[in-house]
Length: 174
Image 1 (tube, rainbow, N blue to C red):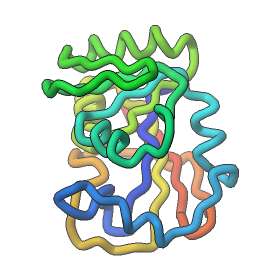
Image 2 (image 1 turned 60 degrees about the vertical axis):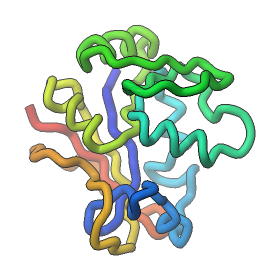
Image 3 (image 1 turned 30 degrees about the horizontal axis):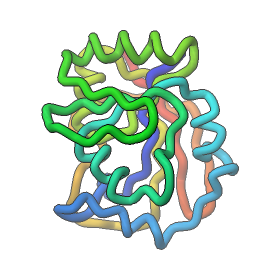
């Protein structure tokens, strides 16, 4: 069981490009969800996921159809949101407590830290981040929400190409 941050970012290290946390920059890039380090193989190993309030709001605003996840989802927030159809749990508990609940719910499968970068940084601060999977797009944004606003030493496990993306799987050095 691993706790993994799986995300895309621009070449200059941003995950969102405007005050509305826009991802339109990703629409110009081509990637195969069934290709190397693709989403489908990644999500098949995930048993629970966690995201921050901004990511959750983005998913709500952009989902087309039913709730996209069949696994338990935690939203770390102090805000109040409507309950969607699906197993969504809202929490403002300390990160170690949330991680314990995620691991239990994942039942031996991996935990996905879906974002954002500061939330993932908080997991790292508690020694609870194992890997980062980043699909780097050939786009320069110049500003935005950073991939991960922390100094973290990493070891590269794998580097592959998937369409327009340079995909890196990195292990957190302890």
